[in-house]
Image (tube, rainbow, N blue to C red; front, side):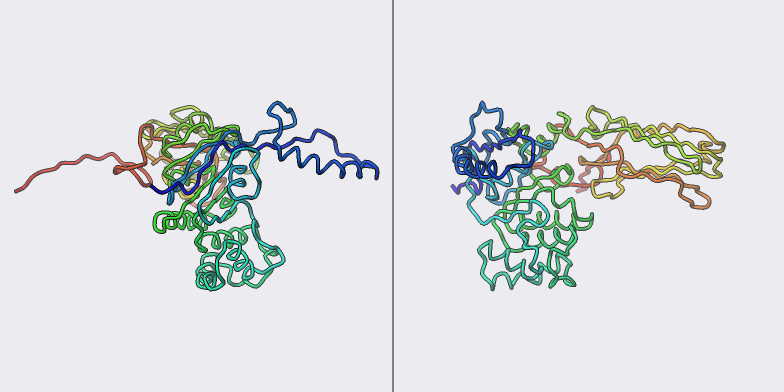
Length: 418
């Protein structure tokens, strides 16, 4: 039986926290501080005392394994230790205790510009990164055109990367990491820098390299839809510890139930003396912590404040996925509900009796317009984030694996005709 491609055993990482206030030093103090550096490094290597108040344990006793060709998600709140773990696995920092064994070539995408030399051009950095991965010049050259096409930076290929925007940096870095055939691809939240179209392409490429080419992917993101679509298994980290390991749906549901996705479900804005505005939106999900169960009712309360009468008001309501695409769309017309015909504040109560969106991460988008002339008064986007969950459903095995937009009710009638 083959060994796991990644083995993490009792991995811990501690950092010393400095409590001394920064101040100007005398020459004598600077010399004394330099003399203490070798002793401090020796003390750090031997490991900080577990009882030391100056030691912050970013990771403590982390254990898990990753099989070859598996796509593993790492989830947890900010400060849980996800990025520290990836830095240890990428050999950027050493663990204080324990060990991590990686049996394959590793490409990491942890933050914008990682592994790039700012003075070199995009072309030169492609070959530099390939050499770091241990590839021959001929191997890099054979992949060169694919990398350039995917990154869409051909016009700036011979420009020093220090002049690139953050988006260009990420496009080139991901293209290099994905196409130079590492056995293990490590991707942090860095993809959030790119636009929605590029994020879709990156997710598609990661699916391709894992399922089609059998490479291993470690993926960290706060985008639960991306995690649920891409990964089959997840590790939930909490304050540097492994809280649980299991199938993606099970771990994401646990993370959400514990408040990992909690955010403000109420949007407010001041009224205007000049134009009609959406002044309040409140989302009422079926469960606490922004959680909406598939098949359960969901309610949205909306307030519109207008300083003048509107001839034919129309309010549009969208639920959008993490990439900003509208998944469901509803609207209210003045003709039907007599709203905004006189100045004042109007309250609309909107209810979906049975929300059937597929599990994932969503936000609300609203537009207030004058229907007859098409004039837009107000628009709000990416408000009231919520998570759709499907308790008890497993993503591994069976017909349910995959993703879709929503799940519609239906019935089947099977008849034998001969």
